[in-house]
Length: 504
Ligand code: SF4
Ligand code: SF4
Image (cartoon, rainbow, N blue to C red; front, side, top):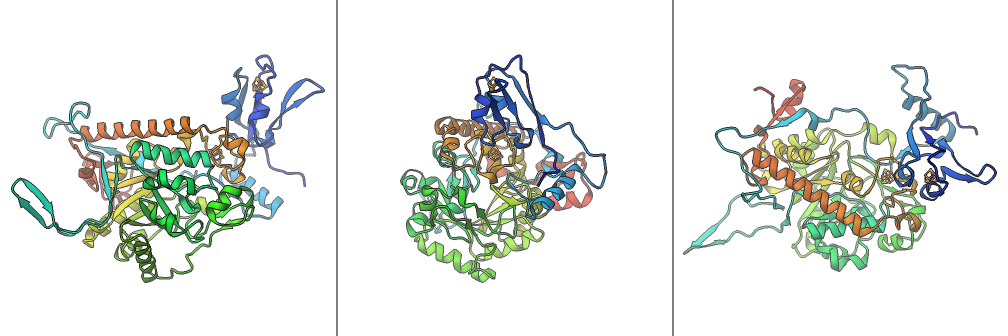
């Protein structure tokens, strides 16, 4: 059937500059560029271009430009180009439109409508280059009261403290499963976590056995509805266990790893046959109530000898605060909430773009509810889904998060250009693929360096902003919304965020 959909991108090759090295042909896994022996020229098929920009960056002559197509439909306020083309694609295929990455719709990004405070005159600012500044963060349940014994100059804590995670910066790597991402990408996240003193999350795909001894101490291992790759060793080698109930990119539905991405190694790690689709169910079939969730939390604590914190990850949805309250009472030590703009390897576009709420609103709602109920100390909050910079992170902490997960930002650090083709398994940057030719493009040493550089840069910026507010420990900022003001927001939005408007 002839497709009636326009190509999304237009490829312009400067024939004068082109040295005919055929590099672009080798770089593109989508077969966009081919050599035509008849004309002795490289030709490009705009229809195949994913807009990943790999050929542009690797062309030694800077001879290629890839830009959005110039073709357009008659402007129509109701029928945008995207709406028309999605409909055409479905008329041609009869299927659900799958996509990768997070929600790209113009929902309000509250980070860009919140400003931070800075000290002036009194409560002077602190210079992080000259004075100690604390970003170390402890995640887990804190006791209601501390029984402390002072013996001479020594302090003895007599209260039994629940197991905690300690990270050197409040930035953790989000759940990205081996299978959805390549082995090299997975290993780079693990190595960067270890080098920097933070944590990565295995996602629902298990932890390859050969990585357990070296990186288990920096891993949060997930237990998702598909129960892939879970055994006692997997649970016990990790720093913490996370029950994944939902994720921001696709709340309410399960996961799907296409059979093409289930290589020998992915299959062994997930404990499933090679080449089979890994479809995790929408619900956990043993969780239909908070009591059921509590049983699983306690089963996992027992399986790990009560030595590991247990986290529960949920998508940010309408009544997230009430759900979180139940999760804390069920015994979770950490709640991970994933907002509307959270990334994914594959999700139905209709779900990705229309379900859930922005993480900014969810953090505040959750923090305020748990404080009002007097149970905020019983869990830590890790926020995820759309954190793009150090300033987003510090605002998330001031809104009430203890730490954040970054996923898409980590992928971008390693080379991702947000082309949204993760679900095809043909990622030209070697990130979301199991094709050895493509995954081999990702050099783990370089990718690790990019990740640790990012953590270093953002941690330093966070220290500078903290110092500017006259605060020397990140923990003192958590939930301190008085350091935030809103700009261009409605009253109801300020109320949900729990912040004043600028000038107030
Ligand atoms: S990579 Fe650049 S120089 Fe090489 S064939 Fe393609 S356009 Fe020409
Ligand atoms: S991970 Fe790869 S396929 Fe996915 S958006 Fe980034 S560049 Fe594209």
